[in-house]
Image (spheres, rainbow, N blue to C red):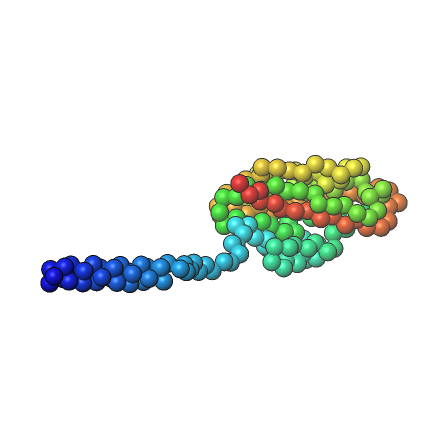
Length: 178
């Protein structure tokens, strides 16, 4: 009977130990946690000015990712060119689209609005966006600016003879998400 008692005691001990292990395991895995810090990734493109006369004449202001050219003007019956009112700098090689978001105002008197993109270091023409030429132009897609490059945006504005009024243009630099 002593052997049966020892055997029973062993089984009871094993059952109690198994219950403790199961309870401890269940308590350990009842909850799992994951902590993350989420932030906004910085853009690889930034607006900048040179302090050039064109930037001042164009009324260039930069607030984060928005560049405003508040004073672009062109003569009635003629064309005015702002050769360097704002620049785009690349912190990494980036492919982007230049989209015409909207054109509003006295477009009936507008002859054309053309934006040409030049590489500052070599004065290479990288792209031409016809914003307006009697009608809204087409977006530019697939432009690629390399790491460390800076491009200047040249604006050419032409009004019809006897024109008066103003036009508002919104362009978007869009970096397509793969």
